[in-house]
Amino acid sequence: MLLPHTFINKIKDCHSRLFLGLFYFYLFLLPLPLGSNRPIAWHAEQIFIFCLLLVYFLLHSDYLLSVISKHRIPLGILSGTVIWIAFQLMPLPVSLLAVLSPGFESIFDNTATSFASISLDFQATIDALLKALSYLCVFILALAIITSPQRLISCLVFMVVTGTLNGFYGAFEILSGQDFSLFMNMENGHRANGTFVYHNHFANFLFLCLSAGLGYFIATLTQRKAFPQQDVIASTLQAMILTWSSKFTQPS
Image (cartoon, rainbow, N blue to C red; front, side):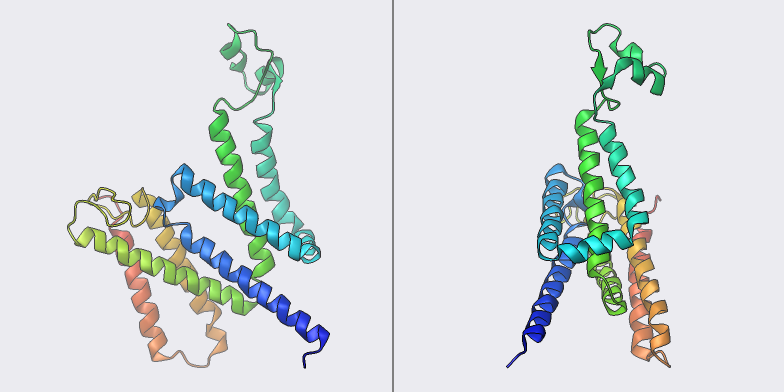
């Protein structure tokens, strides 16, 4: 028979693993719908991460608040960015805007508007605000969930696997000679896009995953006296795949 505190610890461990799995699932989905470069894609992912953080807060509010307090400096910097974007949506006197941005007042010379926002593209600024909020939520969840070296290493491995799969697909769509990609029926050019719209985004994603792979092997060097031969082969293949795929994204 389980003691009450043992049972509670098991429940907390199950919750933690569940949220870790959902967090990995979110990271896996990010590059798939054209690199989240469509409004329907980034709005769906923003709703997902907002809901995930909200549920985590409802279940572990005390712990999450302690995490936020412990990392208040980096979170404060990121929050400052979010506040600045939100500030650009606030209606301000046109005379004040003219002080903040010389020449701004001339935009409203022929109108009776006395208040306006810094942003001239309201919808684009709202989209930027929601994106910044979602990045902040991802950072907070990562701080709360990835709390051990083992989880950090598993996150690095997950990024390498995701990048390797995307690298395979990017190389395949170029070498197959097809006019249109299998994913989202995008037109294939002479540079690989993978599951992204733009080849530079694909290249940056691959280099991020390659960096995560290098970080993984450096982090695990101290845990083993010898580097097994199969690990050397696996790391070499992964580096070759990511580097080889990314070369197809460079301008010819």
